[in-house]
Amino acid sequence: MRVAVVGAGIAGLAAARRLRSDGIESVVFEKSRGVGGRAATRRIGDYTFDHGATSVAPRHTKIENVLLYELDTTDLVEVSKPIWTHGSGRVAPGDPRGHLQRFCYSKGLNTLGKLLAEGLDVRQEVKVEGLARQGSGYVVEGEHFDAVVLTPPLPQVTVLLDSLGESRQFDKVFYRSCISVMLGYGVEADLPYFATIDPDQRMPLAWLSVESVKCPGSRAPQGKTAIVAQMSADYSKWNLDHADDRIVNDVLVDIERLLGKQFETPEVACVHRWRYSQPETTAAFDSVNRPGSTLIIAGDGVAQGRIEHAYESGLAAAERLIGEHK
Image (cartoon, rainbow, N blue to C red; front, top):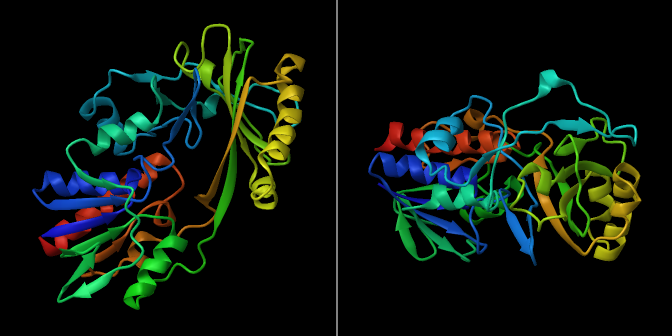
């Protein structure tokens, strides 16, 4: 069996790794230059930002063993400080009972995708815009495959299904967007937490990750601070297409309020828009993927919007193919 995997995010890489472990050939097609999806990292000058997912919390899921024992742990860092809250516009300690073991990588969270992709046939900067049937299999980018695993956000999966004249039951799955703002400051933040969250999503700023506290010594030069500010679903929805300068100015209002006037003016600022950040609702994997099908849908639309769940959905897709078609 030969399998095409569309998308080199965490779900797609998990599927390809699991197929390889059973001796099944796969090709992973990825439209961007990188791998790992929202486990993404950007470097601006001397600053390093995880501007999608900012850490991994294995939560005793299947990715835990992979993260800690199968992959190279040279650059793996356990996050030592907790998450506090800023829901009232003031920073306050969070509930210690909610503290989870979290990890990042000293060189950036995109290290996870790179490690998962090692040894796989990943074709980067290839955008799959349609599929075709050929006998009992499929043609993807001019090559024949016996099965296909689709892992993009479900609105993009719908376009690929339409090219085959197929549909699946996930029309009630909706995604929220997220604007992520990367900021580098010429002053140092000495804080008892690495991130804050607005649990009620009442402020424009939903999540503040102080990258240089999360992963000391690797995200900003000594005496400086790297921050990733992620905006609420409502703010992101209504401001997604607004100019970068306007978004940065809005973010700075909240950051100055939370961290003080010394964080009024950053040295660097950059905006990234995640149009399909996380699903607000999801479809059940088994209801979307009919028994016996060689076209399997995985990813956060049939799981949840976290790295560990995306990984498990990729495993489930591979195991479905192995169990039914090998």
